[in-house]
Image (cartoon, rainbow, N blue to C red):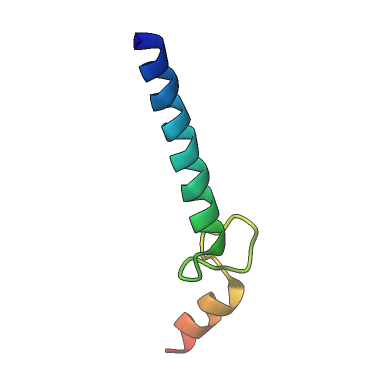
Length: 51
């Protein structure tokens, strides 16, 4: 029984992690110009300088 609980917890953790990664991939708030998704787009930096 304990082994099944451990496997279930590991499975749910993996599913949660993958769901988080998918959410971050499609999240428009953090969309940037680079592939890292950090929001460090050059056009954002240019608009911040002109403000």
